[in-house]
Length: 376
Ligand code: SF4
Ligand code: SF4
View 1: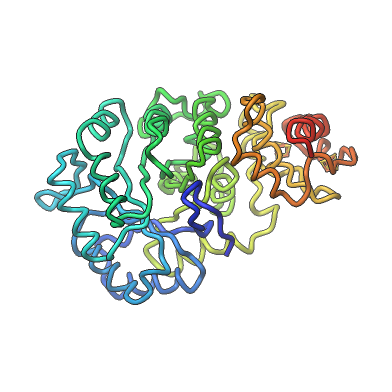
View 2 (view 1 turned 90 degrees about the horizontal axis):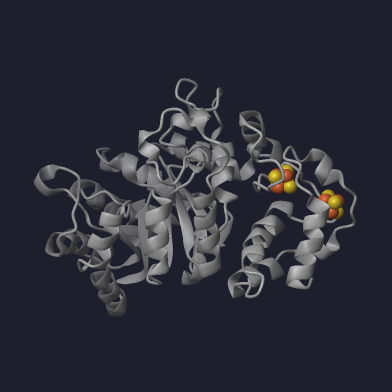
């Protein structure tokens, strides 16, 4: 299992994580089987937004003595008053549900401010006491780090700019990334009308990389729609490996969380780890969709392999962010670039990548730019 650092938290998460949602309503034996298989397969991060006491207790029992092997995202504001799932911004209510998590798990690795999707959500969380509560939890050692969850690039940007969150869970997939920031991804039915990756979403991922805010991904499969021949917006379904690879190739992403309700579904997601570059390649979906990607790197790795071992997509991820901050390249971005096995300066101008790139990216020129900007 590949591990990636979750931004400035310093914690290392498995690139495939587990979304707990589909364990809700499942019997304890099944929860034990899925969590046991996940841990044995190297999965070390779990999202637990579900407020129901039964699913929480099942998960706590299933983890048992292996609790410390799993990084848990627990949410502040996810409640089920009257046995009905709800979002609450009422501090005493949010506290009651979060304290139950602490009772069951001892501590929570990522205390997540729940569902910041609008200006109203932002103000109710940051001005209504929930953010202060998260800070106190951290000071007390009840949570290790502060995060938040969101589907909205605008609201997420505002949350990050407060300087409080160290990580976020965000909905990332190719379809959502085409959706203009001002529109809700939940309202979209016709993705074919969109033109290219939404710049505000791309800017959000770049901001996370700059600020050291790690991203864990929800809706990696677009709630299953991207895998479905009936519901795919792209004419033909994507595969799990392509969806996971898309999420993992965005800047700042540490882990793609996959909701699994059976060991079979988990193993199907874990098969990504042994998939070939061809099986992961999502570039054909983008190149068939429209021409708006021309000239810009979309980090797909379709152009690999490079004879001198340059990770061309990774160099572009750091180069694109640095071009926005030429005078003050963020130290984390410089460090990530410095950690690459082969830098832009290693390019021998063979041009083989440019022949393979479907988007006409001037890779050789960009490698020279990266070498100049980073000095190596
Ligand atoms: S240079 Fe082209 S093929 Fe290579 S990662 Fe970027 S967009 Fe994909
Ligand atoms: S042109 Fe440079 S980056 Fe592209 S494959 Fe050749 S050596 Fe690698």
